[in-house]
Amino acid sequence: MYDLERNFKVKHLEEMAMVAEAVNNIFKPDKMNYELLGNSCPHIHWHLYPRKKGDTPIVSSVYQLPISVLFDERTRPSNEEKEELKQIIKSEIELLLAKQA
Image (tube, rainbow, N blue to C red; front, side):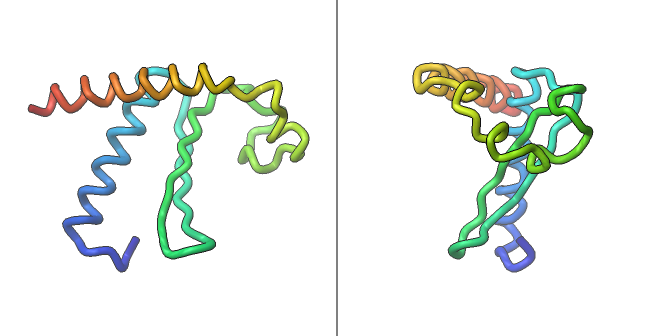
């Protein structure tokens, strides 16, 4: 992030904060974990983890879970559920943008 042009960096962080606020408003987590990555090629992408107390057997990063648990298909939303969640998040972002106007 340090090498991004200042205005782009500020705008990017503002937008990610808004996405996190939308996710928070929808899922009502106890806390939000943020992860910024860009390992394999020159890019950055975020992971937002809305966390609830007791959502994992130990209080730690989700990456401490066994792979079999972390990637268990039974706990993943269906494609239809993912599309619905995307629309809910998009609508919440639109509400937040309208409040700023």
